[in-house]
Image (cartoon, rainbow over all chains, first blue to last red; front, side, top):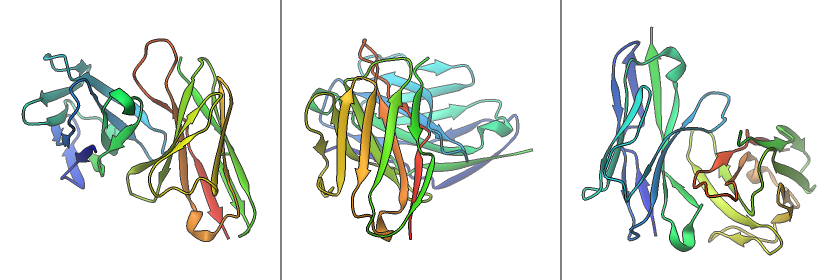
Length: 116
Length: 116
């Protein structure tokens, strides 16, 4: 079984500052995928960033980057130059691959508020 | 690209009636779609995997006779909540992965079901 844990129920940051959201996971699979999804008040799930476990290099998408520590099973999200539009609930998710390919296990979520 | 739609976006029904929710991939084909359920301010929980041309597979604890899933084509999956009760009130979200090589789920905008 897979588990994903987000230990920060809520976070806040000032506009233009940097914030890091934490995520740890557990799986016995080797070829898995990790994701960060954003859910704004509209509740539409939006992909922020993805990481393949076999890649050592941390994924980056514009202001969003991850710190993927495979041995520690840690996958944190760093948001630089925070913007008001970043206010949302953020979910860390794991696709364990193999027979579970495509099935996502989500963390509990972190509500991020960006203050002007 | 990779747009998933859901219909209806909101539905209110009386206890004991059945409600059908449609999930469509608009610009890609998907042999597999997934249905999630989300309670307010909580995470997404996978309910079932919808397989085109074959029976859906349900997660542990999900009643297959209550949540009927039909994946009639490569672009359409439906979830029917049968004999709905107030405890079935929730936000239902579908997701799909393009057939060709992608390993990222794209989510529909969700359907809010309220059972009176």
